[in-house]
Length: 97
Image (cartoon, rainbow, N blue to C red; front, side):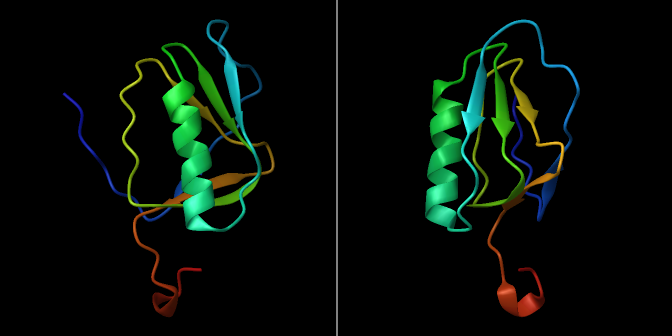
């Protein structure tokens, strides 16, 4: 059973070692444009298989509505300098930029 959780900001933690199994899928640096960032993350999720790692570049990706992933044993790895996935609708007038 999977539950969708919607968060305003999801910081990713960088780890020193990657899992021994699976492949590493790199997500190119974010553009700040929701449609492009979302498409890049979606493509990485579609290519992923059990045991894979999706590694993100530094900075903030504008994701928009929550993206579901049902791949078991999938690792999301942030950049050592910091990676943030902004999910849900972003309201700039509320101070979320």
